[in-house]
Each structure stands twice: as C-alpha cells, then as structure tokens.
Length: 181
Image (cartoon, rainbow, N blue to C red):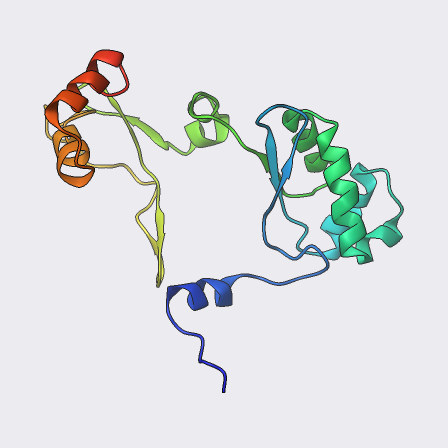
C-alpha cells in the first residue's frame, strides 16, 4: 500500500511545473570560476531549442535530456557565469548566475522594484515576499517606517544568545571582529 502524499513537501511538488527533458525546475550548473554557479530552466521546446543554439549543438539534442545536461555542464564549466548568463538570455533561455550580496545591492532590476529600502535610522532593509505553504505573503510594496533605534543588530542578543545559545563573551568577540553590530 502506498502512503498518500500530503504536507508542505507534497504541495510544493504539486505546484512545480513539469515540461520537457530538462523540465521547468531550476538546475544549478557550475561555471568556470571558483564559486560560480548558474541556475537555468528549459521549460518548453523554445527554451530547449535556444539552449541548443547557445551550446552550438544540433536541435536533436533537445530531446535527449542526459546528453543535453552533459553538454550544458561542459559548456558552462568553460565560461564565466556572467558570460554564460548573457549567452543564454540572448537565446531566450531563463538563466541567472549566483551572486553575492554586493552584486545584488547593485542589481538594476532589484533597485527598480524597490527591494532595498533605507530606514529612518539610515540603515537598510530588504523587502521580499515569502512563500508559505498556501501561497505568497508580503509584497514589494512600501514597508512601514521602523521604530527609531531598532536598526541592524537590535535583535542580536535574542538571536545569538537566546536562539543560538552564544554567551555574552562570544557575542562580544563577534562584535569586536566586526561580524555583527
């Protein structure tokens, strides 16, 4: 007897679109750099055809998922993630390179959507919607002005002390090192 699929994992799986040899799921692929990764999706025939063009491979490869994945891995491994992302975008293949926080803060798309907001105390906040079991919560709408004095690091005692169990000396050491404020 098979167990019925239920719970958050089953709901997430049910929402995942399916399609084609690479499916619509995002697949990480390593780039040429030490810690460069690219996430991409080929959810339909047009994206798979674009992927074959970007890889300079015959269209017939689009139907052979293992061969297409192998060709993609070899192609990405020889390229910087930024160049691979641009080449895939040029062929209408959804792709995004993994980026650090400094790159994200300078991202023109995130800036245009007001993701990073300056607070009344001069600090910065990030306003992101979040996915819960029954759908999206939050929005990229203006956030209320926070209470003055509750800026970056205001909850360090609770987070590092109560939740993580770090003693006051350990928190002081993190503050002195500049790891936390």
